[in-house]
Amino acid sequence: MKIQRNIRLLEIYTACISLLFIIPVMLPYYRDQMNLGFKELLIGEAVFAAAIVILDVPTSWLADVWQRKYVLALGALINMIGYAFLLIGHNLAAIIAAQCLIGTGMGLISGAVTAILYDLLLSTGRTKDFRRLEGRRMGIALYSVAFSSIAGGFLYSLHHQLPIIVMIPIMALSIIIACCMTEPKRHRKIPEKHPILDVLETTKYALHGHAEVGMIIIFSAIMFSSTKLIMWMQQPYYMAMNIPESLYGVLMAVGFLLGGLSSQFAHKVDGRVTSHQALSIIWGLAVLICLGASVNLGWTGIILLMFGGTCLYGMAWPRVSEAINEKVGSERRATVLSTQSLLRSLMFIPVSFILGKMSDQYGIQGALITLVLWLFFAGACLGILALRRKRRAVDFLEHASSRLGLGGVKKW
Image 1 (cartoon, helix red, strand yellow):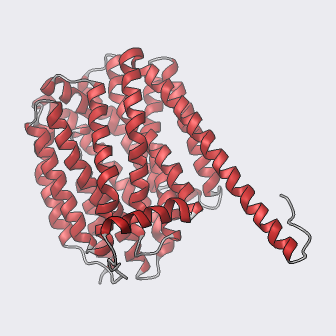
Image 2 (tube, helix red, strand yellow):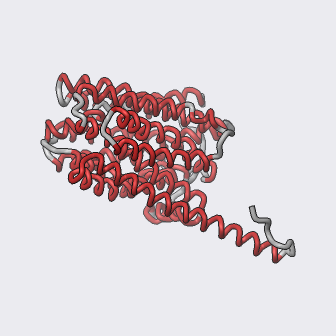
Image 3 (spheres, one colour):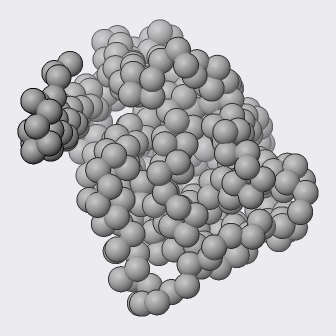
């Protein structure tokens, strides 16, 4: 097996699956084709998230018991069908059907694509390269979105449906690329019980049985659901500033390009700050970005949203993925990674609904302030959980040392 060939194929697959020409003009597309607005866009995204909540972990369980390359191919096929529904649809029902299919496709892809990369490196003893290669792969994804954002705005000006039409054959190409991969030998999980019970057991393993993994998953769920909302807020922000739609793709492309660079080179700060410090800094930056963009509509706010929607995601994702991969075995890796995605989607649903309501009543600035409040509340809850976990660990060590007659544990 040629590992470099498989890594390249995985990166090409990632590039193709990330050519989302419709992303920068999604809100104008809904408005012009279906007479719908930002609230309906968030409803569609909430449906997408709900599909992942329901299907993400079961579909990634499939990646743990089946060949992952075929799971990636199936995910691309379902995505292609979902975008076809979006192409021919004319109402909210069509959006819901399309987002259900796309959510299913992304559920198949999300855990399998990271798990197959880690297994490739594990088979050759190169796991130390995971963060760098995962960061590069994520960077490639964001570069692809950046390119497709520029092209998507141009294509939309020619014909409103053209951005989606171009995506269909590219998704078909992704299917072929996935089937050309060669997977490393691994311990594939043998289903000894009903798949649903196995999925529930793995979810419990990640969120309850292993506290450190659970804390990472909860953090990433809150952080990544928030960065996704920041990304979608850019289009109504442009509308509020009366920016021409022809510039939407260019502006969003700059943000995705910056996000790709932050993901690709995030490993350069390794050793200078701990993962805990880096993730805490990213959280604080998310709060400041939303607050700054909400103070006054302007170009400063646009620049801040560019950083908040993609750069923070690009910086945090490789660290979170590596932390999970180091603590989870190959037989459960895709399922645990998708548990992370499941919780992120679960949190996205109510928060997006509230932000949609606030945007209707108080505009995009009101929605941004609401997101700041959510980050403050969620951060406080996560901090309390972390302190309680630390206190329990100290109490346990003190109890153990007293039993051994060591006189207690030195307090830091």
